[in-house]
Amino acid sequence: MKKTDSPTMKDVAREAGVALGTVSKVINNIPVGESYRQRVEDAIEKLGYHVNSYARGLKTNKTNCVALLMPSLRHPFFAILTDELTACLMKHGYRSLLMITNYDPEAEKKCLILGQQNKVDGVIALTYSPNLDVDGTIPLVTIDRHFGSSIPCVSSDNFRGGEMAAEKLVELGCGKLLFMRIGPRILGEADKRSAGFEAACRRLHTDYEQIILNDEDTEAPFYTFLSEHIHGGKLDFDGIFCNTDSLACRVIAFLAEHGVRVPQDVQIIGYDGLADYATGRYPCSTIVQPIPRMAEEAVKLLLDADNIPNPVNICLPVRYAWGGTTLEESAVQSIQKS
Image 1 (tube, helix red, strand yellow):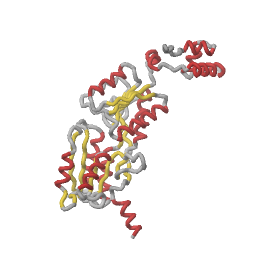
Image 2 (cartoon, one colour):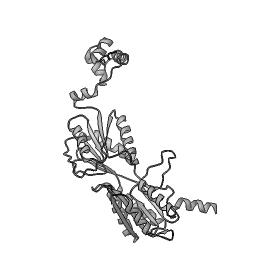
Image 3 (cartoon, helix red, strand yellow):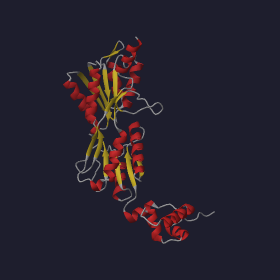
Image 4 (cartoon, helix red, strand yellow):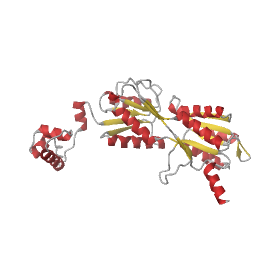
């Protein structure tokens, strides 16, 4: 059977017995008489009419669609951030076009071209291309990476988070700390975690070491390093700060395989604050990023771009949360039982 053509605004106007302009006003939420509005809405429902957003965008240069540029959804932080951004956009009547780049610089460029061609109203991007050309001609908000004074950026307070992790470990009795980081070669806000950690260690006169890898590296050097620092079932470090919760969990598993107990022998803090989906608990003690608020601020900056005189860089506060890999909670429980 041949599929019939989709109903048009003219069909709706004919069914409702009103002028085409009246249908347009109802669709665009422009006030009309209540009886006319009801007739148009009844006709839309009866005919199954849907607004052709793409065609509408060609005429108005507005699509009510925002592109979300993400490197991957395999990492929990990217997935949760994408979910929060989508929900925020929906509240404002916008759809999201999700583009996963798999860290491919060419894919990032193609996403920005969509904005230049007016196929989306703006882009919220978490990018990893070292040579990405951002010219400021389209509404763009970035997460965790600065592109100069013309592009707004939203991040958590990574420097303070690094400080907070070191301070907490020292507060809990740790005397020799280790920072472990794997991430992109390009500089971004997340690199400030190591800077904050180092600053706090120096201020507190605490011994520390750092081992830093790039995303294209394997994590094998981490585990070789840890193996070389395990003697008689004890690690040479009594406190570890990992730049993500995911890395912290992998380190915890490795240490368990080698007889090093967490948190009894070594206390570990991660970064992100990604609660377990099933239990709502943190899989490790962590520095929590305010992901819902990061999404809200990014959407607000994008949609209010015309009303913001100067690009804004928003740095949101973080907090520490216990997740079982530091001693304070277990110590309290031990005291209560004794």
